[in-house]
Image (tube, rainbow, N blue to C red; front, side):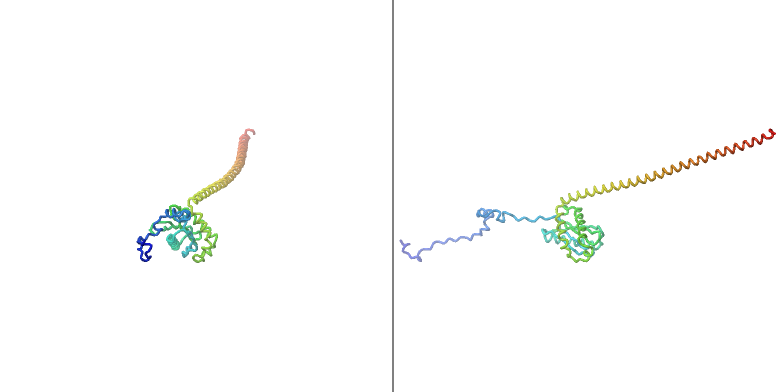
Length: 290
């Protein structure tokens, strides 16, 4: 046949079919199709099957201590799960509170609050501040969602933190320390407090129990005080009654003596009167007798 005898270079070329460039497989195939196409791949190995879990945000976002005189932040600890914008808002609110404390100046037990705004201008949390009894330091705490974190709970946390600050460092070191120098000393304590107060419901229950215990203690102290006052009043009444009894006995003795004196005086008067009458009668009877 001609095909057998014809040289290779004289044979008609096969028609070439041009194909449009196909899209990448990753762009066309869906995650479910890729998972079904590779049966060896397990669902745990594919990133689509196991979504990344976002870290849960704690209620307490920031905790620290500053000096009331110059507003220097001596130590602070922030929740790592928070964003940079949130941390900037908390630090800005803290700076306003410290400036306010320096202008007053802050007195023992002074407390204040400042709202924290997000990038849209909405209130996302609050910063609470409390001055210690020595008016040297101002402790502050930043919380997320002020409606879910009670104000009373925030100030209770600050009061506990202020007590621990003075137990850890002396007033001399607190007044002479530079900004940020005490972060290492207070870091463990601040982390523990933030973890402890992260669940407001649990802490609220604990604080309610503590308040009940304190109220019972107060009632017991009041009852003991009343008992002691009653005992003192009973002793006073007993002393007064004894004095009155002594006075009554003395008055009785005096009345008896006075009665005897009056009786003796009456007898004397009667004797004298009788003697006078007898003498007068004898005087009248002497002429008759003579």
